[in-house]
Length: 324
Length: 288
Image (cartoon, rainbow over all chains, first blue to last red; front, side, top):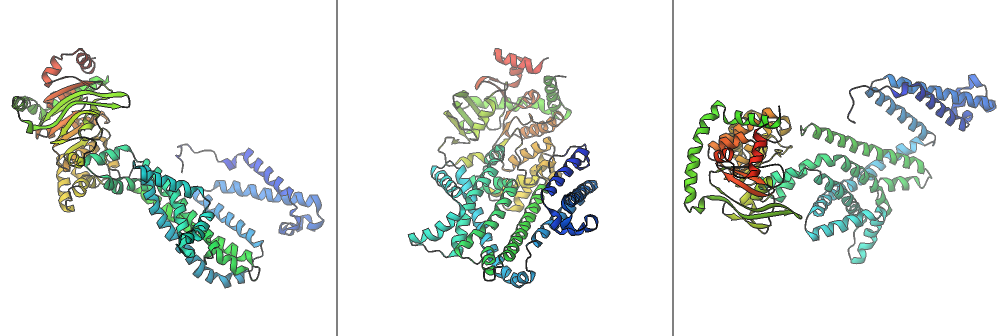
């Protein structure tokens, strides 16, 4: 949270000008579409009569009711304490997105039928690929970050070339290059290892910059104190600098982990049976693409949410460790 | 009340308080002993020897032909107007800074930029910083144990004993399991002193140890330093605490713009300074 003032601000959603303008905006948006033909029209049947024949009056009436409901909603939520507000808004948005997916007319039996296989094969492979890449990327990143900060010309040159190259190429290209390019040198990697290698190298390059910033954020006095006690470079780095840099890099590293998880879907181009690949292929024979894609999307979201929770737990733990 | 008045009072509280006053009278005796040793050719006694040391930051000259010898057991106070030189000099003594000309020998080891045994120097030279520089992610106890354990390879139990012994020495053993951020400035600085002592150094360097402290915390740190001096620790202190200098120092060194302008025993230095620059400085810091 931002650094909060001691004076409570006025509730924005209770200001007349704000509510009025929201009302106007929602009204305008609803008027743009002919909602009479939708389920809204059916609900409004007692007021406007047959929705199809209600014409402009029916359209205005529907838009007006929606706008009133919307404004009433935000005004009421404005009275609740913050935690309740968060809960209500989350639930409302979830319901809205469910309603959105319901419009696709998805076949639930088809999803239930294929979900177990999607999880045992697809999710497991996705987690395996991204977890291994995540560990390798972190290791590469620490080494590259230290190399980029070192006064050794070779180390700096190699590390900066590495980060420049792998940050500068599209990940998809890197996956192809490693899978199709390495065999030219006589190194034949199967699909999963090449996918992991590409992900590790690419995200190692991004995370190297994150870690470098983290290391540089530590006060120079810490180096001086360690040096004056007599610690060498290794001990200073491992026991003093990196432990203090760690809390600083948790949020950006969490970002990277979530990205790795999602970008592991690119490995599907190599025919690895992970979540995205299966979602595409299972739906193919019966042309039920949407079912599987939506399901896979939800699974990705759930997995990312787990990572988010882990990140915020870690952040809280390190905030509590009385560092300041 | 002006700053200089406060600093003068600080001097009183540190030097002329009932416990310390007995010591003030005793100081001249060992210092005269030391000065009599000065005449003898005892080079083994020299623990720091700096000859013609010069240092530049880019084109700016921070030290100009500094000559300074510190003997075992000597307490030296370096003072002078703000500006570079004083801190730079003592930071050269444990090679936190590199000098470009001249020679520095510490504990028998010559300092230069190709040396391989810089750790041998640093583990024998304790340093206390203006901003404490404690390790914020470790407890006070661990701050003190880290050096003995990770450098001397001491077993944990033994390191803990030593750490507790020196925390007791600076009179804060009860804070051992807290984190630095939970302590006051004065307590943090005393932990920093204990941390250096745990390495059982031959020399202690103090880089303006009281400059970042609130006025009421200065005396607790100065008392700790005074008691260290009483136990015969070799000390080089950059400080503006003139009361401390008067009470504890064997020699006071006045630096301005990277030159040593004047040095002398505290009595001579404060009562009859030779150079105009010194007189001006002393009049500014002691009068008003």
